[in-house]
Length: 208
Image 1 (tube, rainbow, N blue to C red):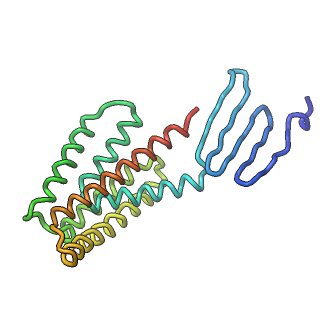
Image 2 (image 1 turned 30 degrees about the vertical axis):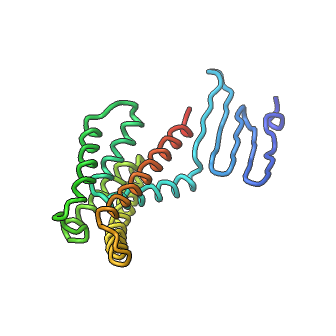
Image 3 (image 1 turned 180 degrees about the vertical axis):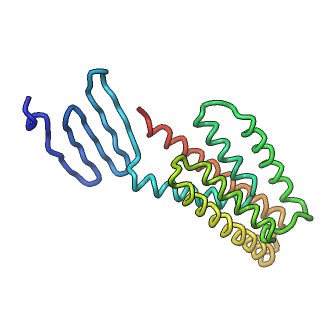
């Protein structure tokens, strides 16, 4: 069979490319690329995120992990432990310990004697938590430094943002701080659930 008969020209429509070449069919739609290859070992299939979209998603995920660390310092490593345990398809004692710390911090935040998150030591702890958690979540070693920086910046910004937001809302609308703390916890849990779902989608789309 000649090379011309093995190669079929690509047909493009908005956000969609379908190309067949050398016993392989490649389909690209928006941010997903799927390949089907016909070989001696049978049919091989692979779906991957496009590099540009994957980098954007990874950067956003790293920053959001930092934001979660800025809200609750132990929540970021607890979330990363949950995601890694899901990827490894096994239970993890570390995940259980971090989960207990996460619940403990949610309760501790309601105590009146807890130091402000913008104090130097508390702020440093949140930045370290955000940086280390984001770096641990990124599987690409070349991108760990970028992930750590995004995590630290996210934690720094979230620490001041939510501290000031709770202060302003409490002062302007006379809302009890404990109620505001519960609202922040609800937002944190929502972000964590969304990140977990994103991790599950990434696992489902990177298959062979």
